[in-house]
Length: 105
Image 1: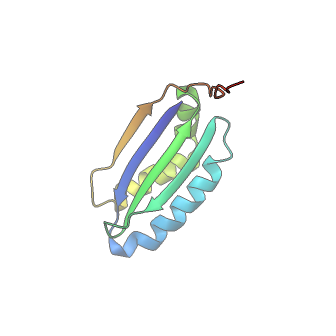
Image 2 (image 1 turned 90 degrees about the vertical axis):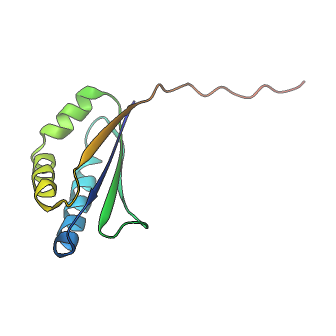
């Protein structure tokens, strides 16, 4: 599994548009094959800042996701509106199968 995180801060005049675009993007992304989780959170610490958290089954799913028109549109608009340098982090996670707890007989 691959987890993607990113953080974007916006100008006040673009905040409402950024929220609407983020919501639409997340809703569409969740429907993609290979998307295990996709969400955004509003930062409680920094004004007009969104944090994105995504879980994908593999790199092929991410490549497909980034190629979608709505992903390209979000990227383009966020680059225009961002007040920070957008950094996208990829975290490779090795999933471990759950083991049942041993029971005493």
